[in-house]
Length: 128
Image 1 (cartoon, rainbow, N blue to C red):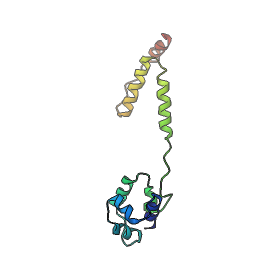
Image 2: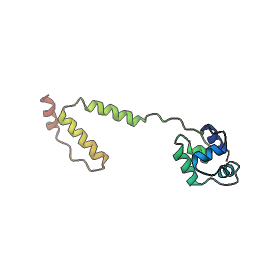
Image 3: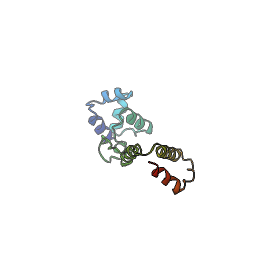
Image 4: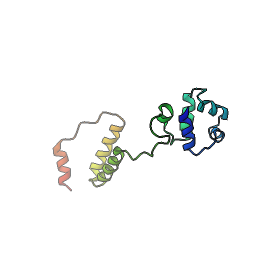
C-alpha cells in the first residue's frame, strides 16, 4: 500500500522499523502492508489515526487528498455561536436567562415552552 508509505514518510519516519515501534506493531507487518502482500485492516487504520490524528484517513483508504490533513479551520457555526454569546451578554438579565433556557432546551432536544406574548416582551424592553 503505497499510501501507507507516503503517510509514514510524511510523518517523518524514514524507516518502517521506527513507524512500527511508534504504532506498537511488528515492522514485518508494515513491510507486508507497504508491499501489498497484506490488506490493511480497519483495526490498523483506527490505530494509525488514533496515534497520529493528523493523518488523512481518506488518503489511506482511497488515496484521495494529502497524507496529512490540513488543520481544520473553526467552523462557521462555532464562530456564529461565539458572536451570539457575546451579544446575549448585552441583553437585560431576564432576557439572558430566557435565551440560555431556550438554548438549553434546544440542545437537549426538549420541546420549547410556548413563547411569551409580545406584550410581555415589550413591557420588559420599556422598563429598561
